[in-house]
Amino acid sequence: THTAGNGFFDPVYVGATVAGNLIGAKVLLLGSESPTDDPAREIEILNQIVQDPTIDGLIMTTPQVGAYNDIVKAAEAKGIPVATTNSFDGTILNRSGIGHTGQDASAAAIAGEALVKCLADKGIEKGSIVLPSSTAMGNIEVNNRVTSAFNAIVKGLKDAGKLDAFKVDAGPENTGIDTNPNDPVNGIVTLFESRGDVVGAFAGNNVFTPALAKAVAQTGMTGKICAYGFDLGPAQQDAMKSGDLTGALGQQPFLQGFWPVMQLYLEIDRGIAAANLDTRAQLVTKETVEDVGKRFEN
Image (cartoon, rainbow, N blue to C red):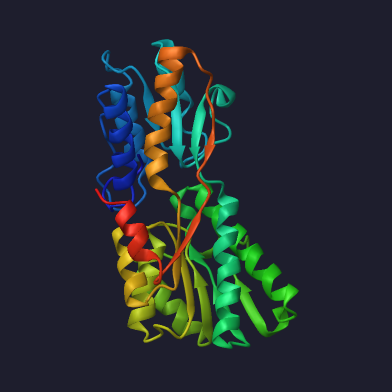
């Protein structure tokens, strides 16, 4: 995976291990040590393990579009079946023959819709809605999430006849307001302070969502704005419990580990062709986070 250092992939690893135990397979769990997305390090690891003669199947995340074809070639040359999970690369070599388990970025619209409802519930009639992110991270899936959330917010406000009263800003390409991924908290705090009238915010991944929650707390905006994010790592769960985060979208990460292991088993053992699984998104709030947290225990 492209990060193993921030807790998001913990339930993915749990799901993979559960599947491995069911079928009697040894599952080796590897990922970048970085707490932020690190596709380059992931690719280094993949290039090493694809040379391992004991490997029977390979599951990988693919956040950096176009960077994995050589790995697929090397695996296929050795007869190693490949499955992808979490992040999707539609251009990958032999895409139709490689099963994918993950969430379509359009699921982020669920958060956009929830944000519009939150504004109405709070009686907020005007202000800025910001979507901080960073295209420099090279994760097209995150870019698409931000765009999807942006479109849903705009549509929801327009349908309610309130779009003219709000400024919805996701940057010039609607992929996010460029924010430093190496210092996201200060970046978002600065964004809030420069706008002066922020009433809503959305962050599209596990880097910017915890940062959004911290920025909300630091600026004294807890409970005053509608702040939504992505993923259900430990930081997100804590932020929802404290109220710094209004809600977050879960990717059903257990399934992102469990299903690709089972898919490779079916391919190897029974010759069943690659099948995709859309894990969709689950909106979690302060009211429901305790129940969801129990499901993702490690």
